[in-house]
Image (tube, rainbow, N blue to C red; front, top):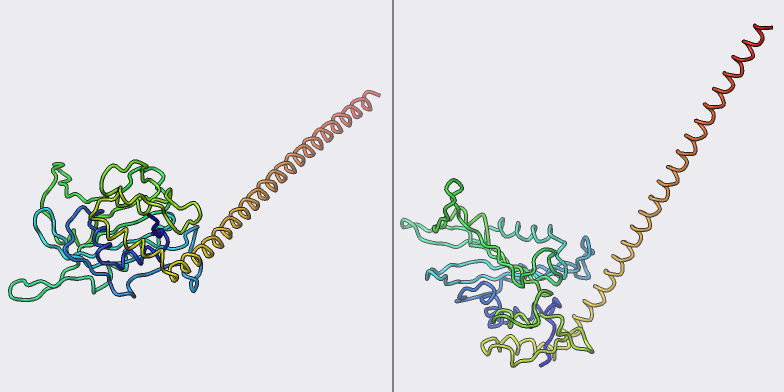
Length: 312
């Protein structure tokens, strides 16, 4: 089966705009039952690096962010209204942009839920969970999906505490990092089978915009994801968007390579200048040493002359 490559921003967003696909993907990664999932208003989904914006720092092209409001049923049977932020990036080095997005969520007064207490309505911040899809691997972690989960621990006794506190929940969050390039050839569970739709090793021979996937390897419940990505291959708008992204990424990466080459050339020039300055300094020291030797010899000769003159 040929499907559109969801590592392209336009396809990734198209995939998550489908409620059934988004619910399956988010639920599988979190390992929790998603009872409802709604995409946040369009203005809350930020794409960085569009043609109207300046090129970002480093090698990054885009950090695509899509936010969801969800109702999650926990293993304990609790229903939680949470905010799920999904970010996709080709690279992992633009950490400050990820942090700015988190700061926006923590500061946004709209990210609250209303509840009744003592006959009055009160507000509290929603629990936040982040999911990062990375095109490049982290240098020291081989996990396909890295789960960073908080624990409550008594720092004095070392005991793990089962209860959660609203104060702590409002100021901290769990996160998941999906390393697309770490997907193994042999899928070990249903989650990796689902994530195979992101596997760049499956790119079609004649197009990096498409992946060739064996649909028989995909669990039946994930069929909506395959259908959505298969449908995307027929969209002229998505094909055009992928071509545009290719052009911009290729241009920016070329500029980045040229900048690296220029920086390397400047570093080499500075090293050569430093070596020349060191050689000049050594030559000057040699000259100074020679001059001191000559001056010493002259003084010795003059002293000898005086002694010979006195003896005469």
